[in-house]
Image (cartoon, rainbow, N blue to C red; front, side, top):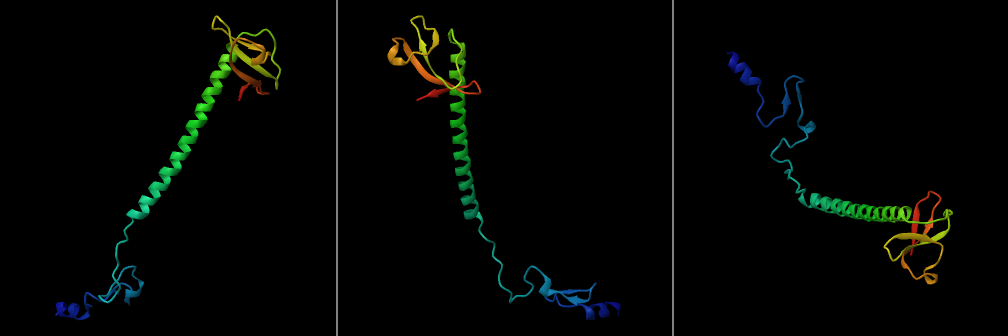
Length: 139
């Protein structure tokens, strides 16, 4: 008899009923509860992900190339500064002035105030001394 009473109160499987709250909850569910409900189709996320990956790779690649360029420029500036500070000169360079770096016949670098057209030594470059005592190469 107990079994029949339980079966009598049992709702069909297609009815969404919460026995603890004693309410019908089909409209509250985030998924379809009826055969007539629209079909939920899984969205293909591959094109969106591929586009995102492509854009990220492009942006990161550009940033990486810029960092490589900055590093190369920094390395070049460091090498020129190392060469100039290791060169021979018998004067105190003034900030903001242009000086010229040469190599003599003994392969020794020296700094001079003479312009390349006034000197017969191998010209390595012209430089300006900045206020931070970093030499900047002039084109």
